[in-house]
Image (cartoon, rainbow, N blue to C red; front, side):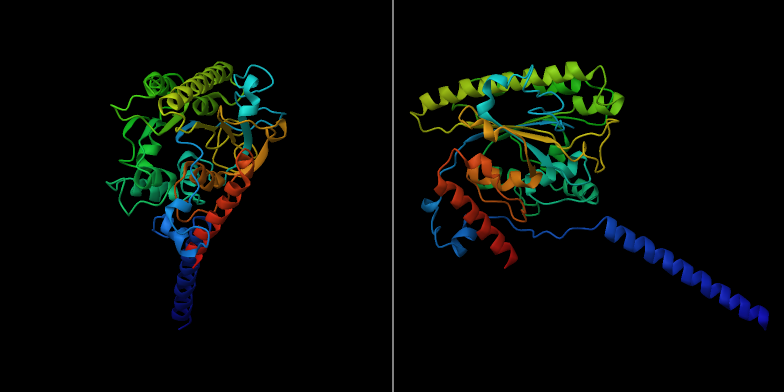
Length: 386
């Protein structure tokens, strides 16, 4: 009798222990890897019309300030804690190509939330949401959806440019963009990030597309780009191989710096040509140079050390003319890029966005435009919460 009682108690204890283990694993994963709820809708200007007293038709919308965008991602480009300096290459006090053009740049530390890996960071900067660890899995599944215009895709800068604004986007570099936004690019060449030992060809495959991208800016016979995305992986690969102090880092920094110089010079030249061809109707080009995340002192990333969560974000345009007060680094959030680009380029702010406009970028524009920008953001947020 005692033996049977003891056996029954043992079985009960084992069942309780198994239940507790299962509950512990469940609560760990739901807490550490939460699935964020997003509204599967797309923003339209009608959302603003519904709530706004100032905006009733498209005629009430202010004209965009830029009509072309160059978006250059240098993977693992972190902000350097030194006056007017960016790790890894934009040392404005010394060799940087931007040194003569400081008034045409504004630099920020763009705070990156964990996980500090490429896919969630791209999603944060394109949708204005804060992805979690689980997004690395769910977004790979989403990438199998076939249509770039599908309602199944989450609202983003890419979706709005392609579908709402009918823009052409060219993409060269990390093929993560192709997985996240399938069928969204009129021209592209993807490079894989898994061959970490490749620190040279992975970037040359991007750079070789620059000449054709900036040739014939006024040619209307062939579809030119409205947004150009470049994603360089070499600097990140060097970090993984040998760390940020590797002997391979200075030549890679110089290579990236020369590319920045080339792009800026081409933008400056092409903006003048486009302006003449359009009799002054064209808008300037906005050039954004940024890191998707940083790296720690071992060259790795994914965690929340200062180096990993402090990538640089630099806004550059020949049309900018900021006082030196606005060159100094301020801290923003990566999600703030979404409403900022939406208003500067003139398309609806993507649904689910939680970012706010980056105020210093509106200094050169009228007070009316700045106030209007925050009104639009308010109305979109109001519609989401309603």
